[in-house]
Image (cartoon, rainbow, N blue to C red; front, top):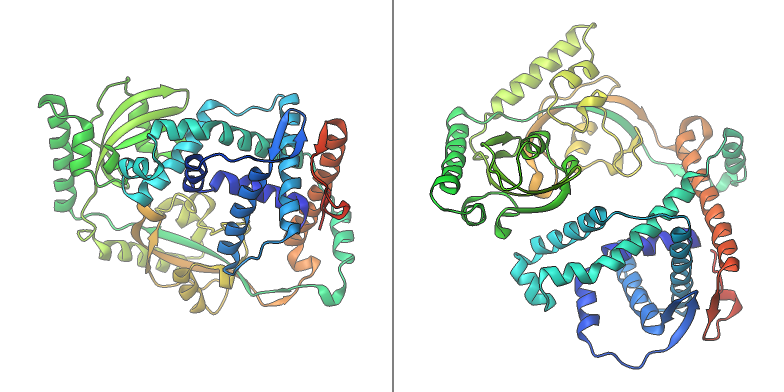
Length: 462
């Protein structure tokens, strides 16, 4: 593993490190510690390194699903990366790289909300942490800000690195032929999605309840918080429907439009979205960020018209297969209910790389089972059910899938795999650039080791 990759791993893993490890460190009595290094005016303690080593090993164990043994190499590598992180942080300050309070708060709120969902309520989290939510946010703010500044610094520097086709070819030609990897079977697919419409009675009942709850808040002395806790179907119900400051882009369009039209303290009319019916109170607005509480009443998921969704997809499928003037992409843009794939003609992209081709083994199980039944390019499946979205935002839907391209398993080559090889070559070039940059920055700053470091562990590169 290259040092620059490892450094990026540490930056990301620190942001994602569970709050509970921090709580344990804060609650333990401070003991005499040892200064192991100094970077400008930053003091690095042995306990700092030990803590990150523990976090790094736990992260590796989760990723690799195997026990990771401690080694001096890991400890010294972590120390070097902490030093580099401080070097980048100080250079970022020189370069006037900053992160807004809103972005920091958004990251912290998302992390805290994630843990609230895990433990069940804010109260349970506060009891486990031994602090109030307000204090937890305050404790995390400086650390999150620093990590986000370092991330932005890295992204900015890497974005300055580009690569030419001759460089890609040179990179590829240096790889021994017997070392070229086998590329697994890959497919490119498109889909058209239909979300079953709710049966008329179920939908009207859900709207009626939302209107009654709104009336209770406006005219009968109830608060939106208590109504949300008692009736809301949303994941934030336990916290009174609280959705802390977030970008309007993070909400579905109907929610954002309704909330942005309110004055602070106002209650919206009943708003219909793909998730159900909302009653929204705007608490605060800063630029494109909004702080709201809401009540969500979902339509009974057993009262949807599945057959209507499947029939719509059957008609679309027949139109594409029997009429040469009608394309699958055109029908996807006009009729698909999936906001992620409809604008691009139904094309399904690799969620990790954003590439069109996806290894067969990387398809989600439901899509994998469909693709296995498609023999020829251009084949379109019958409507199949699946779950669209993730976690609390998921909903049952149906889709038809078209096989656009299939590449059999083969040894990597420039003709078929240029995009993949270009990305690998660019990453290698970016890594070398970052390594050289960090080496030069270290020479320009005050870095002192307070313990003896074996030479082979200084500025470790793999």
